[in-house]
Amino acid sequence: MNDVSLLAPPIRLLAWETTRRCNLACLHCRAAAGSGPYPGELSTDEGLKLLDDLATMGQVVVILTGGEPLLREDIFDLAAYGTKLGHRMVMAVNGTLLTPAIAARLKDVGIQRVSISIDGASAASHDRLRAVEGAYAGALAGIAACREAGLPFQINTTVTRANRLELPAIHALAMQLEAAAHHVFVLVPTGRGELMREELVSPEEYEATLDWLLARQREGKLFIKPTCAPQYYRLWRQDAAARGEKITPATHGMEAMTKGCLGGQGFAFVSYKGEVQPCGYLELVAGNIRETPFPEIWANSELFQQLRRVDDYRGKCHACQYRKVCGGCRARAYALTGDVLGDDPICPYEPVG
Image 1 (cartoon, one colour):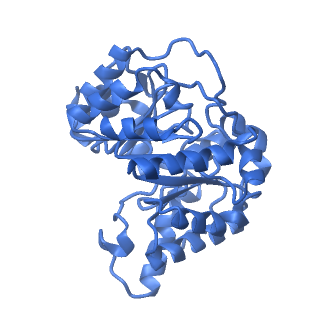
Image 2: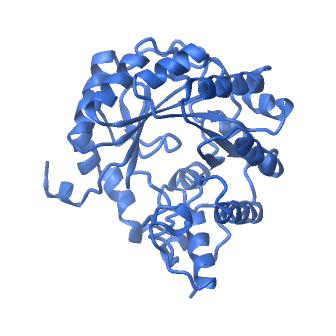
Image 3: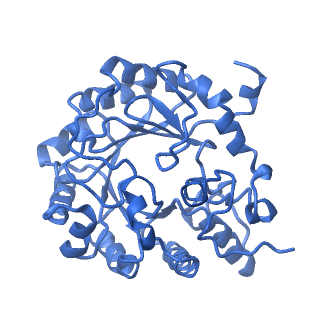
């Protein structure tokens, strides 16, 4: 490695698309995932090597995702191996394939939490976005299986114009189901999501949604993590300043981040065929683990180095005094403008001066 590696931040989270196969056909899917097959999937040995390489970088939160990771035959072995190495192993599933026996097995191999998406307050709205009738009932059955097995779970929700006003009811459901957290994603129009750009919230709707999320976080009833929504951390600091509060790691139970968008900063994504990206929604390739070990890609990739130089961002992101706190969603900037260092088009904030 060259001297640039000394400047690389620690890797905190890695999402591994263990398979692109999926039993659903969600309208907003960043991977446009389907039943497949998808040739070129990383082998078991290649997956084990990735986990080994990560272990040289410390203990990492590894998100086994897809597609639907439960369609991968060796998924339990991979989870157990990551656990043995000391990683915090978690899994993102749609819930429809979870049974009490599978949930118990996931717990046995060290999966510490699963995420299950609820994108509507009713079966009709959830199934419409998931494009498969019965997806909502399947997700709730999967949650019931987790509860029976004692496997912690969180609810993930992708916010669009169509379901934005259902968010309070979904949040209430998450609390009723005793979820460990509610992670709220804001649509990035990639993959099949490109076909629903009209469902991207407006700047005004976006800010109102973030305000609502901040108010719920302040209530402290359920941990909330906005994702693909780095402007939340600008809003959080503005709100704290107005209240005369000092930002600390314990403020509202939230970690004091230096930057909202973690793509290439503390987070990376590995595709089913080994391509390393800043995140799953930003389909620019930093390298391939079949050719270069992940630690070298993380340290030396020009793409990652570019994203880390926040002072080089363009447009109002360059002028914004919150650029090191927020940074804008790089994936949404790229998807909507073609410029990975450009403005996040749904950000309503106008930099001072």
